[in-house]
Image 1 (cartoon, rainbow, N blue to C red):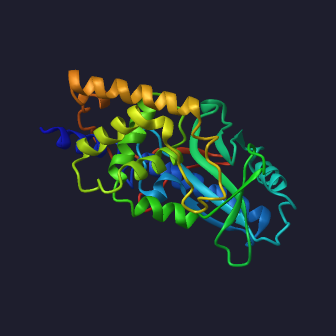
Image 2: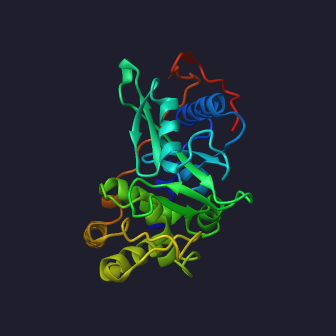
Length: 298
């Protein structure tokens, strides 16, 4: 097996089966979240789905689904300010879910005594449309001087989906997970796309070596820009000196490891093919206990 064939196998092992247990659970959480938001706020907010699944960068070891909830620019049903919207949406879930308040999203975790604090891989992302065109939005941010960030979900998704380097991004995300790095997934994706411009036709091994070499040698001079608002959003807080040092150190160690011991010392031995079965797991939802149907759709 060549090194590139090995990396392709790693990606296969990190691909979630659309009909597998993880995706069934994720779809149930998604539907439960939308149902609760609709019950509270009606048909007003735009609710759609984002995260790594929408961008095609999902990996089994670190996946999520963003439930995007955007209110019209003149809709005050959840509050007058982004902070009030954030708090109102958190109230929708707090009785039945354990809430983790993230800088710009609400993470849902289990409140069930049998699996307390289990991560449901679901973020509720709140925002308000800038105007009646319903394209650009102001996202809530708990940090930063403005307390908000102007951006565009479709631009983000298209920027990554059309980059041609999604496989490399998925492997970089796995590398991030294995090395316990603090860099945000979105920042890592932007950095990978920028560094791999003109490299998408190269083998995966060469793409990854190039990425890590650049990060090792030049990360101090690197910046990342929000493709939806390159001049208005300052991402330096998310790509600070500490994050850069972690990246550079991990990249140096990884390159040394590959040279001395090969790629399997970076991503590990390939596990044996897991045996499949026809059982559908019981999934706990607040107030319900259901068996997902094998015909559950997207």
